[in-house]
Image (cartoon, rainbow, N blue to C red; front, side, top):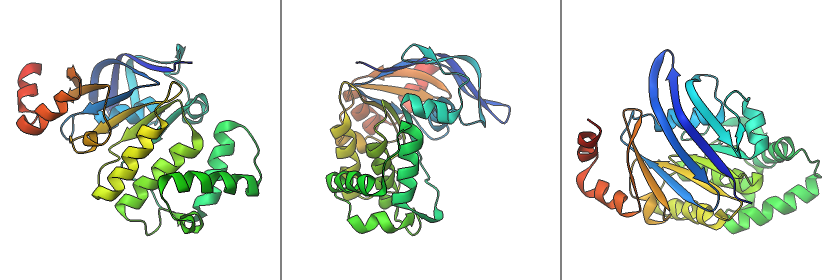
Length: 248
């Protein structure tokens, strides 16, 4: 079954300021969609609004997930439907191990009880696929993690929770090349008829390893251009200035 997250003329405000100004696009399972744009263009604000963060108010437009209107649903309701958001700046959770955190999240999202033993078997399998040492599971969530380890943790969550549509907010920031390859492999491996992703990034670097099916460019809260993977190469060479001219 194909899953879709459809945005219809979505406007978002933060603290009374309009930051997203009428975005319409569709993100589908089986595809990797990239959203690029300069700092302050509204990309992260859009992702948070799609996930239901209360600070990011949708003032106009609709969000449809598999044709269901989720515009006013709470975060946990969207997660249970199969929506996932990875954070650009993941928080540390002192005293909570990766295993306990992910087991609680798995049970909350899936609605299924799973024993500690069965979950640890599942977790070890996912960690092996990601090339993450098993000792990682006993550490406190993100405490003392490097930038790359934090982003691997986000990919581990995605792998365990198995969402239908993932919103990946600058998973390439603060990572070295080795971590970037692991992240890219995680996204590519999960791509299937039942999973798709919106990959948000400033740079073409990540898209060297994750080949997008479609790229959208956001400037000043609006989608100003779209294209295939060659668009990222144009941006790498020319910057975003030529697209600002298009949007003027």
